[in-house]
Amino acid sequence: MTVTTPPALRRRGRDLRYLAVEAASWPASMALLVASVLVLPLAVLAGGRTGGSPTLDLVHRLALRAHDAAGRLAADRRTTELPKEAAASLGAPQTRRNLGWLVLHATVVFGLSLLLVALSVAPVLYSLVAPWWWLFPDDAPMSLAFEITSWRRAGATVALGLLYGALAWVLVPWTSRRIAWGTLGILEPPRSEVLAQRVDALSVSRAAALDAHAAELRRIERELHDGAQNRLVSVVMMLGMARRALESGATNALPLLERAQDAAGDALSGLRTAVHDIYPPVLDELGLGDAASSLTSRSTIPCTLDVRGLRRAPAAVESAAYFVLAEALTNAMKHSGASRIDVSLRTEQSVIEQGVTEGAAEQVLVVEVRDDGHGGAVDHGTGSGLAGIRRRAAAFEGDLQLISPAGGPTMVRVELPCGF
Image (cartoon, rainbow, N blue to C red; front, side, top):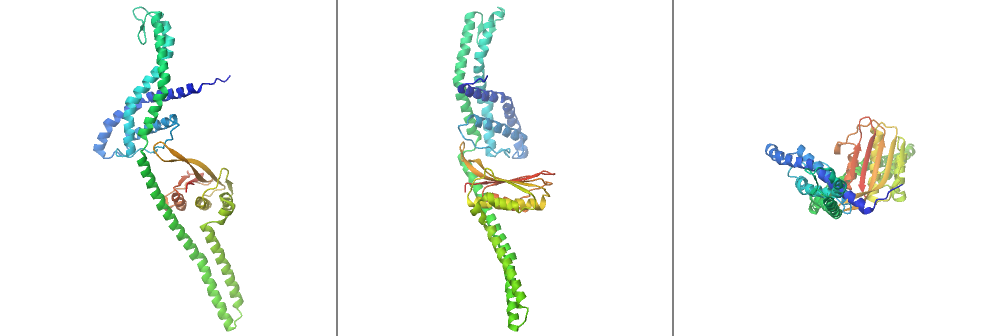
């Protein structure tokens, strides 16, 4: 038989668990507070900015735990994510917020949490224990809220426990949410700081977009110069030789014209390739899924393609995803030594930061390329084989992840926000 718990009781049980965990974590927060008071001033005097301090790292980890717990409890308020890495120094804004929260947690939060947990336990404790007062000797009577020496006092103790329980029923949800909101308000950066970080990110992405655009122009110029232009020069030279041959009455003009025609065909093919590389027409005609299918079908390594969950995105984002996939496949075919490549394209929902406790859902186009090769690939930044992929991702404030342990497999994952 399934027992259904009333929603109000479930909510209060969740709130009480939150307060109990906060009270139980007091020894850790108090120990870190004492360590911070004793160690950090000495570290500042001895080493300057205390970069990489183990104490700061532990404070940051405890703050992350508290932030996650508060965010889960205050689910009606959307929260931003704190940086997973510890703050570098005492001067960092996040470090100051962490230490401020630590002081609050080791004092006010612990006291309130312990009091409300005790109030919640009192009804059960008083109701179960008070009726057994008569088992205690007269010279050492049972003592809970007061000494119990008669059934009247036992009844008063049970009634007091029920009163405590009623107070806890009202105060536990109210207090737990205030503590959670206070934790989020202290630990999360203010809106001005979030906006400043956003401006910095936009500046970086704009610079990356300009770099990617310049690199693309250089690539197109190189393709045209080394390909179509050289072939057209050959066509002009052979046509000139054929003309002189015709003027002199020589019989070798026809082979020269045939060679010029072949060279002109090669030049036309090169121009088509260059135009295709600027923006593949198949993206407009068939969409990213079919365009990716044409790429995987040309792979020299057996390739699977999964486009379930893929939705249309802005043309610029689909174009970037197409070229990311093309470069990732080229890298895998050249360097992985794989016998199989798995490609996945899908659209996911992400949350972008907008303020202290608010955010908005955003679609992200995800490109994943996995191979079963020998692994060991390393992303060295702009000088690596992933430089082109990184540039394209950065131009859209996207993210590149490379997982390639020695012995394989290798996974390249690129996330491209669609909000452009």
